[in-house]
Length: 83
Image (tube, rainbow, N blue to C red; front, side, top):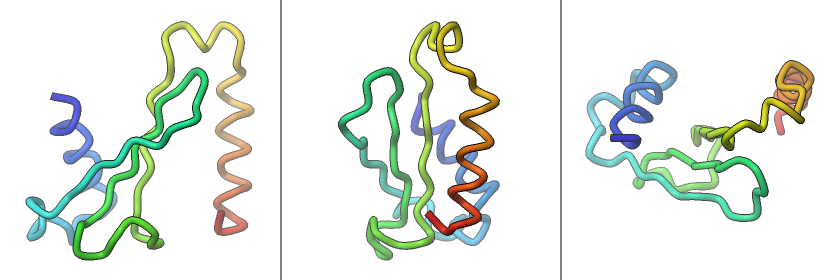
């Protein structure tokens, strides 16, 4: 199950969520063309917090026309700017 896998990953980054595992929510973001983005958050905290995680699921074969290394570097720069 995709959600179970995402919960396991989320708990690696947010170990304090272990006691609230039943409170973990997922919300699919819309607007992507080649990827799916899914927000993971605690229902009690709400979606729009700095504690929200975003999972990016790459579309099939997109690595043939998107440079993933450049994309990762861009994400790191955005994180440094707290975006």
